[in-house]
Length: 631
Ligand SMILES: *[C@@H]1O[C@H](CO)[C@@H](O)[C@H](O)[C@H]1NC(C)=O
Ligand SMILES: *[C@@H]1O[C@H](CO)[C@@H](O)[C@H](O)[C@H]1NC(C)=O
Ligand SMILES: *[C@@H]1O[C@H](CO)[C@@H](O)[C@H](O)[C@H]1NC(C)=O
Ligand SMILES: *[C@@H]1O[C@H](CO)[C@@H](O)[C@H](O)[C@H]1NC(C)=O
Ligand SMILES: *[C@@H]1O[C@H](CO)[C@@H](O)[C@H](O)[C@H]1NC(C)=O
Ligand SMILES: *[C@@H]1O[C@H](CO)[C@@H](O)[C@H](O)[C@H]1NC(C)=O
Ligand SMILES: *[C@@H]1O[C@H](CO)[C@@H](O)[C@H](O)[C@H]1NC(C)=O
Ligand SMILES: *[C@@H]1O[C@H](CO)[C@@H](O)[C@H](O)[C@H]1NC(C)=O
Ligand SMILES: *[C@@H]1O[C@H](CO)[C@@H](O)[C@H](O)[C@H]1NC(C)=O
Ligand SMILES: *[C@@H]1O[C@H](CO)[C@@H](O)[C@H](O)[C@H]1NC(C)=O
Ligand SMILES: CC(=O)N[C@H]1CO[C@H](CO)[C@@H](O)[C@@H]1O
Ligand SMILES: [Cu+2]
Image (cartoon, rainbow, N blue to C red; front, side, top):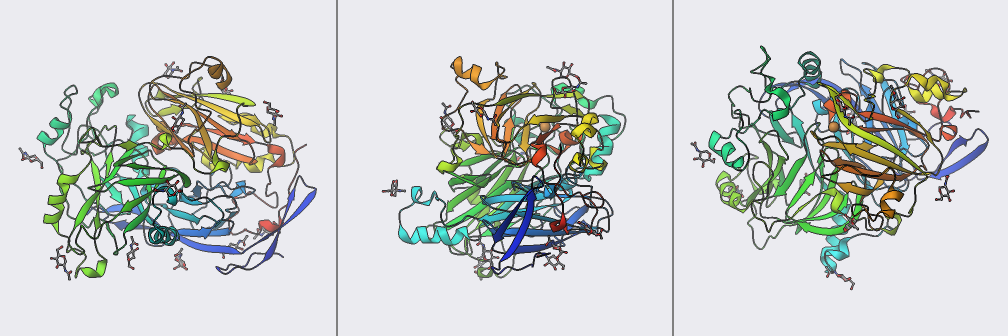
């Protein structure tokens, strides 16, 4: 059969792949789900102020991509933007389809303006909440992001019985699992990412001062007074905090030398006088259900978020899509790129439909800015109120006394509990750590090596500037040996099939970095927020009884938050041939070079070697692809 047939209905077809150039594997599958995404450029007013935005099918976030575990998916992207781009499916492993990973310069050429490009992959053996976003320059933050949800197959173990044994409630949870709600926050700057990057290059300023925090594309500019800011800082040294809540950090020289751009929002400490807006905030209606099943994502390109819903506990059931032992908390700490799935009990015997409303808060945590995005959890349904804007602001004022966190994300009471993704345990046996020893260890060192230069390597090596526009590395594998790749910065070559690989990631003192690995989930086998890993391998640490090593029940996810001065050790099994980026998910840091490319099992990588590079748009007939063996 020569091509897939798009169908939401189960149909059967043969998908023929050639592995190692010799074996033909015929895989029968249920069908393929096709999604069409049109990328356009428009002026929008997400927080009441006009901004040049990139949209997906006219919206940002873009439409949901949903499927059942095991499905094939075909996402066809029509680039009607004035710029090139690409789409990466964050959390989708791309097993057998590394060329659909969406990283320009590594797995494809950028999709140029006017071109069409299809990403085809299978979600076999994976489920839960992921997301898609542009992986070219910083365009993700300009609006190119959206949710992906893969419904788990029947056989998987669920955590629901650890939450309730009431059969009606269990049924509700199974029902809600089919189409969970989504809350996505984005860091919204006054300027577009290209404008910010130009400023970064010219003035050595990182984008650090948000205009607003959006929730599902909605937001407002809130202005807080000096008293509020100073109270938040009461236990810390005095500092200049501007009207947008941005403050000058001690270690950035205050940008005092700058003679221009002082007014511009992205210069911490110099924002223009804050101008409040009253645009619409996002409203999540309970629709009368006793439970809310919500996928929460920090899609922001910049800051970790402290998330909470006033007066409502959060029961965490999955991290990065993977079910975990449920934990009841009042607050989630969500690094950039991380996803947390929660259950929230909405008690309709206590709160009144059409009336009671509670704030949903995404606050920038660990600052350097005091700012939060607010949405509403509203009892009742949209129709139980005549107008969308008929929000009871008075009721909101009342319930805000029941809030858990301050504007800076700190908890208001020591009895409240907060949870980081790295404090969870995977639920299913299959997601637990199986390997006590690693075959290979690689070390990384997160450092700022220049005003706008960031590196993952001890010697300061960075991903090359504009690596995104070069001939994709996957293509360069070709027939010959990988000699072509000698000039590639930050390439790790020696990962062989089925090896157990440890990545030791130490962080220098000044910034935190959310490190994301493509193509794999990993176990966090050692972590410390305060010290670098004092060994050269996990085995040495085990031999020394190092207390931060965790080989019994380590967390399992795809983003590791590495605090300043701390470390994370990631362990994964190299069972997915491909070229996988390992990078900081702070967009400014990634653009500044903070990444590495893991070349895994080059002999087994399936590559498209027909005419031209993978980026030859329109040509999605990769069923015809020949798989070559590098000899
Ligand atoms: C994916 O969908 C596009 C648009 O419908 C189609 O042209 C292309 O052939 C499909 N790709 C595969 C591999 O089926
Ligand atoms: C996006 O818009 C296109 C064109 O209007 C439409 O065909 C497609 O179904 C939309 N995609 C999704 C996922 O809604
Ligand atoms: C439900 O029942 C199981 C098995 O008896 C038990 O392990 C679990 O703790 C119960 N769940 C709750 C929420 O009580
Ligand atoms: C500052 O804001 C707080 C909280 O909104 C308010 O209680 C206080 O009265 C304000 N102070 C001044 C000086 O405006
Ligand atoms: C509530 O119902 C509306 C209208 O049917 C729907 O759009 C929305 O997604 C529902 N919300 C939840 C949380 O299920
Ligand atoms: C390992 O990690 C889990 C999950 O974060 C935690 O509950 C457990 O206490 C950790 N064990 C050790 C020995 O650190
Ligand atoms: C971090 O970068 C700075 C600036 O380039 C350099 O001086 C320093 O040696 C680096 N630190 C380490 C441990 O590599
Ligand atoms: C820096 O270290 C990396 C990783 O060890 C290595 O591949 C690269 O060749 C080194 N670069 C320089 C300039 O020494
Ligand atoms: C990895 O190491 C183990 C021993 O620790 C060994 O049995 C296994 O063969 C090694 N795997 C590979 C792929 O080298
Ligand atoms: C697409 O690729 C196939 C080989 O995989 C080739 O035969 C065909 O000519 C290409 N089509 C275009 C439009 O480039
Ligand atoms: C029709 C309806 O239920 N309207 C309600 C909308 O919300 C306000 C305040 O939140 C209520 O007072 C109305 O009764
Ligand atoms: Cu970073």
